[in-house]
Amino acid sequence: MQFSINNIKERLKEKSDKIIRTSFNVLNGFMLLFVTLLVMSFTNRVIISPPVDSQLEENIEKLNNLEVIQVSVLNSTTINGLANKARNYMQLRNFDVVEIGNFPEQAPKSMIIDRMGDFASAKKVAKVFGIADSLIVTEIDSSLFVRTSIVIGQDYPKLPFFNQ
Image (cartoon, rainbow, N blue to C red; front, side, top):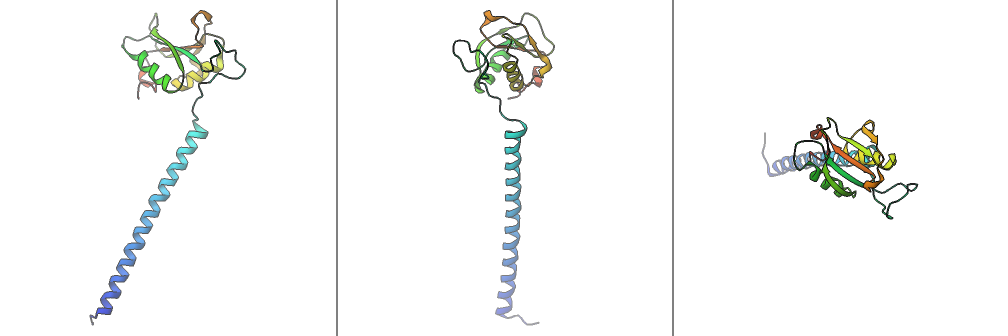
């Protein structure tokens, strides 16, 4: 077995080529994983769970020429500050929160109260707030000047606003 400079150069070149190929394959794997995650995220955001629009539907009568859904947030728990936290959550999503306060009784589950007979707006608010459509009730009260009221119930730890 002879060791010559050409032999050593040849072995070093083979090893460096192998390292470069391996590095390139690892980099390609990471890029493929990254692109896959981007596609999955895009699909989820656009198709599976698109953002909820705070704008009123075209066929809905607008109060005071307002284009966004006006809501009130009512806390029915004994935990202070939940309505304020929920207000911030809704305002970040471009809803007009005109009032926060306390609900007169404790509710076991959070619910949406449709105040204007506008079920489409109530449904949008329910979706943003993570409340099932079955927990939307209609109690028309046009003196409140809001489309919907959000009642935060004892199930508040399960709601998205609480976990942010």
